[in-house]
Every structure is written in C-alpha cells, then in structure tokens.
Image: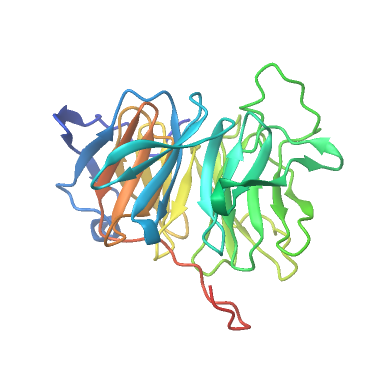
Length: 311
C-alpha cells in the first residue's frame, strides 16, 4: 500500500518502548497525538496479528493471530494470553449487545460469539454461493453488520462469488445483502460518528480509501471523495477523523480527507482500535506485534437512534 504522506523513519525500539516518529501535516493533528508520543510493545513474536477490539466492560483487548487460528486477549494485569480458537479470524468488533463478531478467513464466514462460547454463523453465503474470505466489519446504529469480502484469505480455494464486495446482515432476519460491488479488494471499514456515511478501504489495484454517504434505505451513494493510498484496517475517532493502518504507519485524515498527522510504525500496521482505561489509547496490530500509543482523542460512540432505543 502506498501512503499519500511522506515515507517516515520507523521508531527505534528501546526495550519495551519506542520513540515514535510523529509528523504533523496540519495544526489540527497536534490535538490528536503528542509530538513526543511513545510506542509501547505489548507483545511480539506472534505470527500475523489483526482485528483489535476493546471490550470496555472487561477492560481487555481482543485481537486475532490469523495463521495461528486463535483469538488472543490482552489486559494490563495479565498481558497477552490465548483466548478462543478460531478459523483464521481476521477483523473483530462488538455488536450492539456487546457480543463479539469475527470475520473468519478459514471458514469463509462471519460469526458471533454467544454465551458459554457457543458460535453462531451470521453470514457465509450470498446468492447461494460461498463468500470469498470475510475480512473486516463494523456495526451500524440500526444493528446491521457490514463486512468486506476480498479474496485475500482464499488461498488455493476456488472463488464462488463473481465479485469482491461489501455486504450487510440485517439484524431482524439475518438476510445478507450486497451493499457495494465496485471494489477490487475491499478491506477496512468504519462508520462516521453520526453513521450517515461509511469509510471503506480498497487495498487492491486502486489503493485508496473512500467515504460514501448512506441513504435512508441503507444504500450507498457515490463516494464523496477518495483518499489516494491504500489502507488495511481503519477507525474513526470522536471528531470524525479517520485513522488508517497504512504501509508506513498510522495515517490520520480529517473528515474531508485532509492529511493531519502520520505516526511511523514498524512492522507495517494491519489495524488499530481505541481503548484503554480512559479510551485514549490506540492499540495497533503490526504483523508479529501488538503495540499501543497514548493519543489525545477516543473512539466515535454509536449514536442513539431516533426511536430512543437504548444500547
């Protein structure tokens, strides 16, 4: 993936910590991360990490080690431990009830973890054909589960889908619908704070990130703009800025796509998530490592619905 910002010198590890190379592209970036921010290594010597999600009620981070076919958990007191077996889980998130959702490469599905660790498959086919290899996902305020379905995890298996699309799962009857098909390799996905638009990374031949308006019927309009340079996982903060895991590190962009700040990360990051005790820690999965960086902003909260339904 080619970053639209200048190539940065990676941080030099000093034991468990690193002095981060932070480059500001706009003064607004100085309100998001400190110039003297440090990167802490929480775990290393893993295989290929992805899908970090903070579970506030349990004060733990859950993330994937894809080739190891397992989910790991991290807490401040216990560090990283094995958590659950998976079928090459990639992206993870929580639904509106706080249940863990995972995209699984190996099983070509999206699953939900139920009480007592039971697993429910919520998506595995579209138009009676197996999905490719669900990659990343996000939950909208109405409970629909949106996920990307590139071909990265197929390996030597045959693709049944004629495209690599973005889908959503209805919370009422579980219907899987195609949301957008005009991608080469859809990857990271996240919603704006008001859930009126969605960001989607295309990490294939186009190498770009688009912001799309969402209509009242849930369909996507034409992209408002494209940010050149691809990304893997992406997240929105409380102000609507986009935090993107890119080749050179974490790139942060304003709601209208303007570069604000870059944080060099090595190895190349795969995804990120806000969390921690105050919500202002950025956890970063970076190939064989799990990292964290203290930042000055937290995640976008899921807005209340017009019907006033509580989360």
